[in-house]
Length: 572
Image (tube, rainbow, N blue to C red; front, side, top):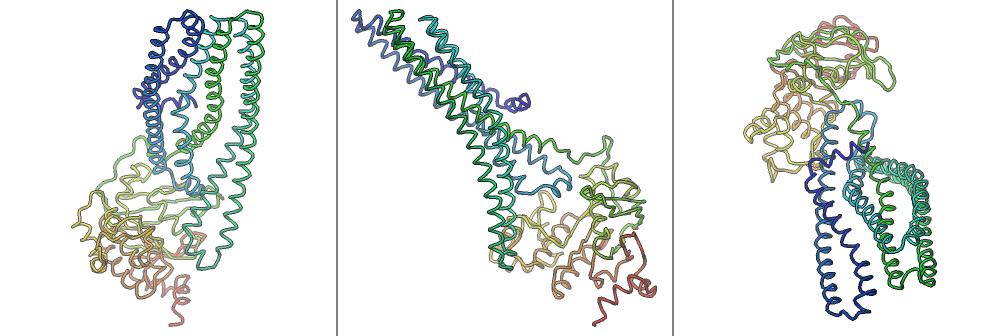
């Protein structure tokens, strides 16, 4: 784990090395003051060497000016290194998320994922900057202080440094308790973030049902769990710091008593005793830094562990010899396909076979839960089938790259998602680098251009989060324009008009009819009025495909489709 963490320094190794060098020089500067003080008290002052005393004072002032410059460099560029590493990790995490399968998002909350990318990486950035710097400087100051103190009086030095192992043993024992407590606190932060993100996203539903109190109680439950977890972590931290603080205070008592005894017996001079006190103050700083480093290490490494869990999650991978899918005509074949979602292992599709000729429109109808939407998810390989094969123009989709496969498939769903941004940006999402002329042409084909031009800002109109400033029909037509711009050979319409009123549905249906021309189309619909003109209607139940045929043929057959149709239109 540590080796992996260190690897993120590599792109910034030059700046990081300069930061460590400055920290090292800063530590050397800190060792000057006690030794200069000792020389002044033992030599310059008793021998009345005023000029030498002033010269050394000027030299010490110059050293402090150098220290100021070094501290500026360390504070600024050291943090820059940490932030750049944080940005590298965040980009890696985001790139990885883009490649994760649908099953990951089915099983993880958005807020929890965001917490790993935002909160955890912030702690990692702090560790990346302060960790190596504090460790190296602290070790140098401790070793340097020990050597210089030994040159003055070895027995007194050993007495003082004998207290340090107790400090290290105590810190090591409390470290494990802190680690577990801080890990649990992070988990609770993720839950708070997830609940908050979910409540904000559903604020309109909460207000519509007057469920503000329920949402508050739900949030407060996770909030109190967070408080409890934090309290446990702070208790562990309090034990850690109070215990360490006592040992450090005890060390001060040792130096005063032992140094006083040594001075009393004239084993050291008063100047040497003063120098020892100054050195103790110097190496107390690295000890405190090392103690703080343990806390930083807990926060940073627990965050890094969660980051690694995210980026180590298996991504969607193409076959080693996968080929590009090109010149797609649109022939689709489901050959004895079986599929089950991993959460319950219940088979949604079992030995399903279906052929769709290029350019034809096939409608999938039947009860909810029969697998219609699952078929739409399998075709672009959002989920992997367990048995059988799916082919496009005779090519097994498992043998082609996902990017080339999805490039030839356009999807319009009931739940339209618009990104926060402008209308232009949302339509242009269908084609990278799309021009204004191409966007306008797609909007005209989707019958949304006139509406857009009637807005004060036209195509630069801000749609709000998830397109909240637009109606359902307007959002749907923008999503259709997006697919027009993509110009795929295969089209999937999954309940594309089910959430619209009749008048809006008629307008949208005209846009969809235009979109379907010349494309192989799979339509999933509960409103049978929208599929009457399909080349073939396939009735799917939990047992599989029950009926196939045209609208007219299925009505004449008087089977399941006829019953569904009559139940929907009996009141007309």
